[in-house]
Image 1 (tube, chains in turn cyan, purple):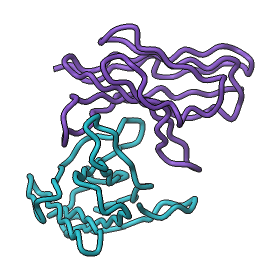
Image 2 (tube, helix red, strand yellow; image 1 turned 90 degrees about the horizontal axis):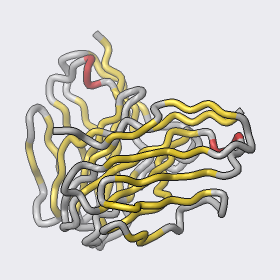
Image 3 (tube, helix red, strand yellow; image 1 turned 30 degrees about the horizontal axis):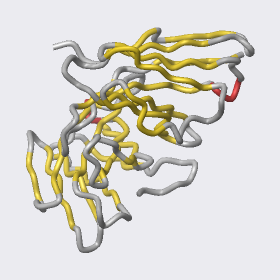
Image 4 (cartoon, chains in turn purple, green; image 1 turned 60 degrees about the vertical axis):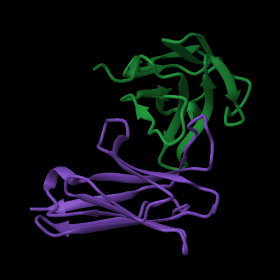
Length: 113
Length: 114
C-alpha cells in the first residue's frame, strides 16, 4: 500500500501538464486494481481498473500502468485540468470473489490554473 | 441510474445517543460494504455483506457498532452509545458478486459526535 503516515502524499501540477500518481502494493496475489477519485464532500468515484493479466489500460485522458514485477501501479492523467483536483486512491483485490478491496492512503492532486 | 444512496448526509448528535446510518445499494448489486474515513486512519472497511449475510465484521471497532442488512435493498449501521471518537465520514459501497468489479460508493454520512 501507500504511505501510512498522517499526511497524504501531494502532487501539484500546472493546468495542461500531465500528472502521474503512483501506488505500491505488497500482495503478489492481488489480481485486480482500481483507481478512485474523491472530491471534497463526495464519495470515491471509480475512474479506471486493470486486471493482473494486463500491464496497461487507457481511458479518456487517463492511463493505468501495472508493473507486477515491482508491485507498482500508476495513474497518468493527460492535460490535467482544475477539475482533476482531488484525492486519488488505488485499491487492490486479493483474489476475492466477493469484491473486497484494500485501499491505499491516497494522493492529493492540486492543479493550478 | 441511481447510485448508492446514503442517509442522512450529515448527523450531529451528543455523545451517548444512538446513531443510525442508512444505505440503499445499487439495484442488482449483492455485495455491500461499510467504510469509515478519517484523516488519521484513511478509509477503513468496517463490515461487508454478501447476499444480505455478514461475511467479515473484523473491522467493526467495538460492540457499540452493529450493522444489518434485512433485505437486498437496505442496510443500516448503528452506533450505540456514540462517542466523540466515532466522528468521521461513513461510506457505503456496493458491487456485483463477481470477480473484478469495482465498488460504487455513496456520498457518505458526515457524523459529528459532540
